[in-house]
Length: 131
Image 1 (cartoon, helix red, strand yellow):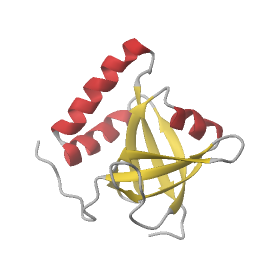
Image 2 (cartoon, rainbow, N blue to C red):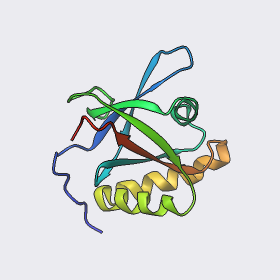
Image 3 (cartoon, rainbow, N blue to C red):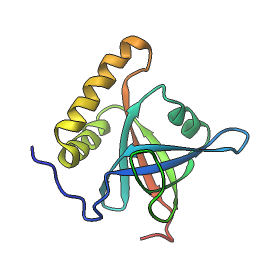
């Protein structure tokens, strides 16, 4: 499947999650946008997932590969997704990133042996004040 071009021309977003003490942590992620939601895929036992399970409030912005923001921050609520809904997220990301995403999924599967857990999805719903 060919890579679908992103209307904004962005490949990454910086996800800002919060530790229990309120410290912000920024992590770069691939994303796919559909409707008014943004979708990502990550290992289940990653720290960002643990932080989002404790505090679903987050922020995100278009970024470079290293997670340096290149656009305005948007606040959002994140949901961790497992099961059948994960197929939709994978399909969106495969459509955007093609074989690069397939390779990432393979690395995630191999990472299970190292204790990183299964791949899971993140659904970011931006706050209403943002388009």
